[in-house]
Length: 269
Image 1 (spheres, rainbow, N blue to C red):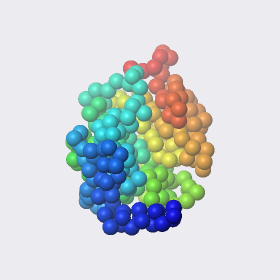
Image 2: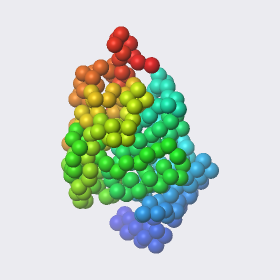
Image 3: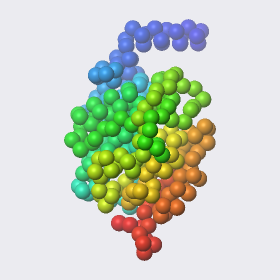
Image 4: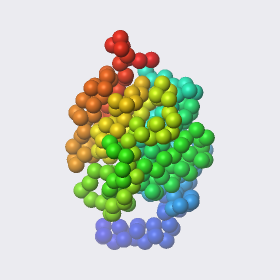
């Protein structure tokens, strides 16, 4: 019987299509979100607070409590009350995926660079930047410790593709890898304007950091250190890299938050 029910669900989903299926599931859970198809294989979630492009049905449930609520929660995950931003500031979103951090960042700072290598995620990121913000620059690349092409392991049915080989993946893409320091020079970003670099790259965080530090030292760093580096957390390595570069580091769950220390030994403003 369980196998029959699963087969029936799959049949209904195939008949309805992904967009109508996501809408049906939202209604069953009391959500007012609706779903439709966007360009380049994307899906679109819409509600009274706005709309957002995404690329896999596994993300659909994130917007059932409101698109703005999801964006605010993502912003809060990587920032603290001590972080202050203004119109002259630049924020870098590394591993931006579809832009759930870059979008609220664009409201806080004058300029946002959103870096994402995976083609489907990048298509959604670019669509979101064009739809909702005029100050996000979407860049299709993988942050690394060298500026060179690298192998990127794509998990097509999930949102956790990585330059670190996972236990399972569907295929390997060759993507442009870039040192963040090289990217910032290419984009002519003034080091004094660099306020925050957020990094979530599925276990590849140490390489991304080494491509940034010590050439550029943003006021704040916020780095995801989940168990994604071959099943282990890169937290110890990330904290060491930050402290060596002159940061006071606070750990909040799986997030390492770095506050740049001034020459006088105090956190920079």
